[in-house]
Image (tube, rainbow, N blue to C red; front, side, top):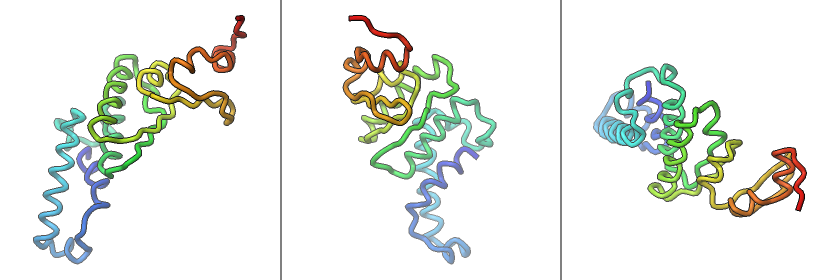
Length: 163
């Protein structure tokens, strides 16, 4: 289920042991109640609370992406790695994702490493950009520096820049 996806990620923080879980003692029950509440809180943040007991694979694509991010945040990371989070999203979903990434960075006080081909998303959320071509770094800088970089333009637009 959707909630189980998030609860599994929180389980790395539990202190009860297998015996506690088997006999379902007070320590197990209180920690499971705490984890369930934390998971529900995260689902609410990502507007997934209504789907908490749905089968996760049945969610629409955009909601599956939000669930993936919620699950990652449940591990309480210091660095969040997002590998092509906008892949397969329509423009409205990508815009919502951009706003969510900005909010997550601020609200969770996280550094975010974003690997993405959607340049609108990259330019909209990144403070520093590294551009690779065939695994080699061809540029680095601010969004403004990157969008005016002739090497990047040639590599990604296939146009020779005439000055």
